[in-house]
Amino acid sequence: MRKLKLIWDFKGPDALKIAEHHNIHLMQYIAIEKLTLNISGFEVITSNHAIAFMVINENEMKPVRDVLKPHRGQVYQE
Image (cartoon, rainbow, N blue to C red):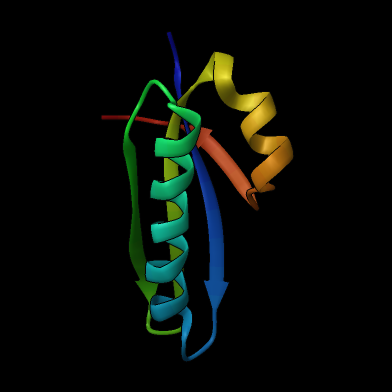
């Protein structure tokens, strides 16, 4: 089964702090909804751009996408 990486972009001087905090909520959502995968995190792209992300199985994408409204997504490569 394909894995998808759902991504939320944050920009500005507080981007990293916001992405870190958003990741806490993603981890909570994964636990509450008992999603198959338990992969989430955050990354610095530039000094003014950071992302938070979670990885889900493709069959779980639509309900998660509709509730959490990620900014974009891509196929997850391990």
